[in-house]
Image 1 (cartoon, rainbow, N blue to C red):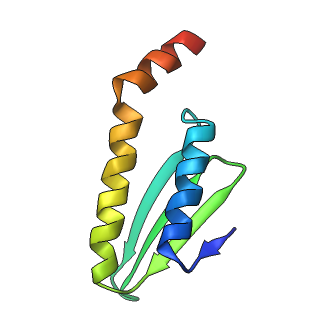
Image 2 (cartoon, one colour):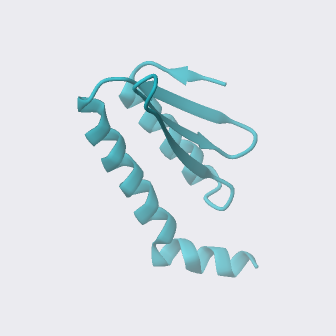
Length: 86
């Protein structure tokens, strides 16, 4: 499981993974209070991308990226493409 240290590399890889097969990609956010770590994982069951941080300024970046992915997942174009394959 690739653990990315650089945020820009993680976002590029996650977007590429999502665009390759949008119907199989899952995004998980996990916060562990005892460690103070926020973790975002993007997976399609074959590849698993992971970015972990304990920096407060990274929370905004992760939140923005997560909401961007969620908007892509519920966009009308994605739904119509999914309906065509069914």
